[in-house]
Image (tube, rainbow, N blue to C red):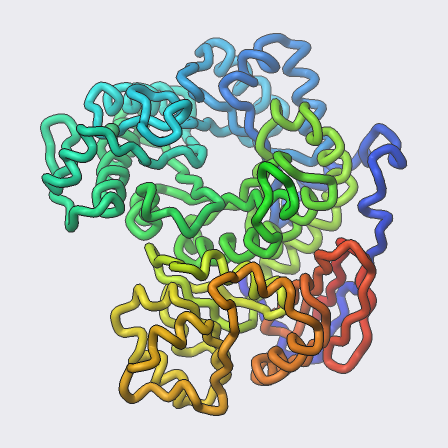
Amino acid sequence: MRAKCRGIFHFLSVSFLCQALLAPASAQPDSSPPDLWKLANDPAQAHRFSTLFCAQDVRDYLSSESGLDTALQWCKRTGVTKVYIEVFRDGYRAEQKALENAKKRFLSEGFVVSGCVTTTRVGKPSTGWSDVASCYTDPATQTNLQAVFEYAASLFDEIMIDDFWFENCACPDCDRARRARTVTIGARSFPVSGDSWKDYRCELMTQLSRERLLAPAKRVNPKARLIIKYPQWYEDFQDRGYEVARETADFDRIWVGTETRDYTDRHWGGTVQYEAYFIMRWLGGIGGPKCGGGWFDSLGTTERTYIEQARQTVLGGAGESMLFSYGSLQQEPGPKDILALRGNVPELLAVAKEVRSRAILGLAAYKPVNSYPKDEQRVFDFVGMMGVPLVPCHEFPSDAPAAFFSVHALKDPQFAAKLSAFIKTGKPVLLTDGLSRSLANQSGLNLNAPNVRILPLKHDPKSLLQLGQQELDELRAPLLRPLNTAFRAPNRVGLYLFQDGSWVVENFADEKITVELNGKPLTVAGRGWTYQWK
Ligand SMILES: [Zn+2]
């Protein structure tokens, strides 16, 4: 999928978008461009839109012919060409007849059809989030779980698992097993490497995935392929038993939560837009060809933030955007979001094709698997908002032209030596102040070298959003030099570079801005993006 253009630059397309794309829903006619279904089915597309019918949606929307007709039309008008029809959620198992009929109907209309399971209310309630999560140490819960996956595999060859496949129970049974350092599944037991909750939960979820999901599903249906969808909250994966190294190796495919929502939303807010790009690329690097796509929803969004989620998913290199979910998208703000999305689908597909045929360029951003943020929570997302182009990675980026390091890197036991060697190459290095403090007494490590810059987080990564343009321009200049790029821009602007010289600039602020890229002024609409492919 990687194509590099080494000859004379060809300007394939240049687009300066205006606010028109994000016009209020009321200003648009209540119909979508008629050709989205045809466009989306073009075999040359590099990206696909899909949606999920939750188990309750199967009951409420897909159990009658008229409900099926409405759903099919909605999908076609949205350019959705793949559907996931869910078998189980919140203790409810969808009716076999309804599932089979819906599957048959969608297949006959030319859709790709897969199944889904959401592991909520599977059995004994967890002591954490007891209304949805379960205690997976409990033998009866383990048995229920297996039955759900056997049922799903009897109906579908591909099964997505929504991001509730975690463990946060700390009941006496779990605590006893943790202290005994033993995971027990049926008659089998598995040793645990340590006695922390992280150690126990990661081992429990890894072994349960093998014993109660993957093996039984493939026994029932040898063609069954299971997809683990990782949540958007990447800093907490290991504490709740999401073990992205072993689970990615074990599962057939992975999916990525890119539901950043609205930063200022009272209930769902606090996550900046760049996070979707960061996690998509980081897990994309871990999963390689197993990484199928991103997944976002309309909770706590406006049309603008909904479209931003779609753009970041596409810029993250995803091959698919899963729109969660048909039922929830019928509730506010879903209909407005979908109307806005339909207006953007042709462009998103076109950009996806360009993105997926190119390799990205930027500062390596090193987050080892199972690494802890300490007080640098999600710092990568905020650095990306500063117009610093990142290339997320999970292994030390020895060959990168420039790199950003945070306390996450301390998970790597050889980090200090590797960093020392990297600094000696003279390539630009950006370090957080927290990491610099942690490394202060390392012998042989010269943090005062001229190519090293310290980024002051002051224990609060969010404070980076307050940095002014002058500070940012000065900070970026030496970091971007080996990328043959110069960029002057205010905060809350994303810069995405590609190895062939192509670029994307996305403005996350409401106001129109003028930035300077490689000496040329560039105007970008509020909440707009602009790009150039070479
Ligand atoms: Zn428990």
